[in-house]
Amino acid sequence: MFQCKEDCGKCCTVIPIPADVFYAATDLMQRPITKVIPFDLNTNRQSKTQVFPMTEDGTCTFLKTDKHCAIYKIRPTICRITGTEKRFPCPFIDENGVARNEGDIKKLEEEMTERITQRMMQIRNS
Image (tube, rainbow, N blue to C red; front, side, top):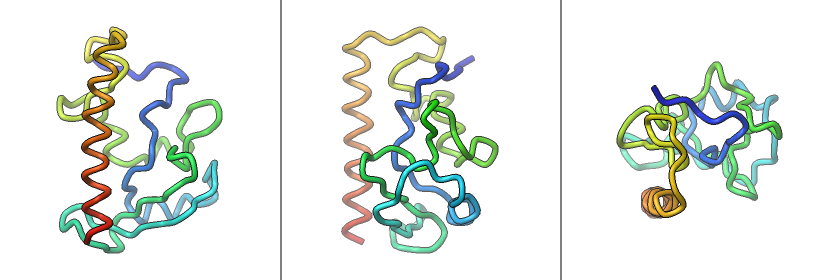
């Protein structure tokens, strides 16, 4: 069974967060937000159901300096399933807990970057 590496946090980037979770946890933010983009993942349009809390460095605003999640108990679904579902693999550790080689990491990072870039372009164009 997949388990995140202790003190990694490499996949903790800007992601859509349910608006109610985001606004309930603003006191737990670990880095400043440069912009909050409201968004609905189901319609690819701006909405108040989800938000993208943009940060200067592209890291999740709730990632603490010790690489633990400040909102772990209420973290978004994507954070819960990354590494546990084939369509959301961890780029650094395979499903058996074995560290990936540099080539595999690079390939998965490129694929994930492409997916994220496409999604962000959809957001900007809607």
